[in-house]
Length: 188
Image 1 (cartoon, helix red, strand yellow):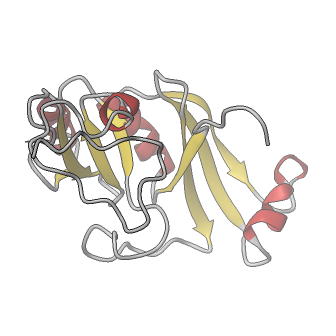
Image 2 (cartoon, rainbow, N blue to C red):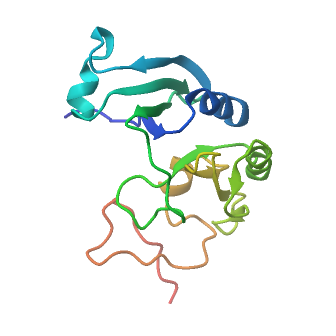
């Protein structure tokens, strides 16, 4: 494969497709660009769902939302068979995706919007790079999806690590860095 590959979209399962479209639009400013539509394995317009989701799949609803950066959020409500409740905790101990991060201008204000719209604050906003005005926090949408909120673009934060002003050394995994970066010179 040649060329740069970017994040196209993230798929999230919810128990109420219309409620989720409204919530992500009202609270985080995403725009619904398609749907909700009905997915049925026997329908000619969505016949691919049987080969993707397997023979047990019978009915779902789907909507596509778009963020200002062009990355999509694809929402699914599986009806037949229905989805199960999420377990307690953040889910980091399970394999696979465990959170969706949104870049927001004001982390605290976004947390308040989430709480006011039926979501849950999991953590308060914390500064995570000394000397930088960068904050992050965790929350949940009303259906349990873990959301991270960050007030700086991902590339700005992580592509020049360690950041100027960092006072603690980063411990790298045995075998060294894979990003081509260099640790700052040891002052000793």
